[in-house]
Image (cartoon, rainbow, N blue to C red; front, side):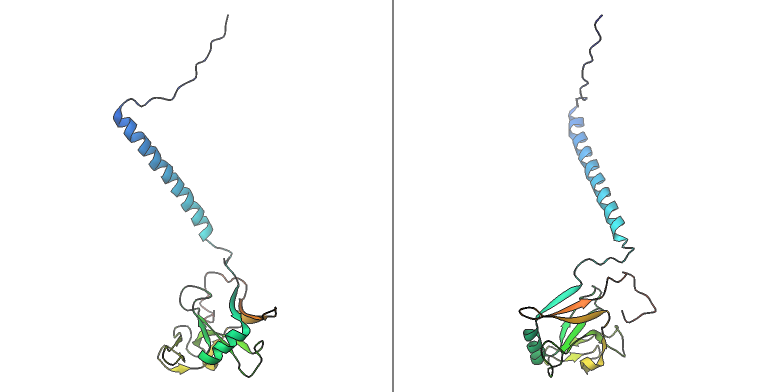
Length: 182
């Protein structure tokens, strides 16, 4: 006796026009909903940042030391907004002592007065190129809070010496209420 042959099963055919119109649309919606759910799950998992991982470079290249030093002599200290974050309170100021060689005498400061804190950020007066605090009072770098050890200025001695700002190791994303200097 011969064994029964199985015939392959065919997928059900959509017989009505309504089924042929609705089923592919519903299948597409379900596919994109599942894809969105997977993407959201991955993003939620990665956004926890429990270890304080900081993406991006820990160095910011200002440029050649001779050009940067000459710019500071002409226009005053360099103000860089939000190199350490995006909340507007982590701007820094880079200065150079003109009495020292271009490869020496660099300093980095937070962009706020040491006696006022980050609530009173400084800015550059467009007309005079002078630094001024939140009240419009002209300030110098001597009035600002030093950024070391959070950030430091490094001169890289290459064919054309370059000045950079190097930031400390990645900081946690949450800030401590007891340490207002960060």
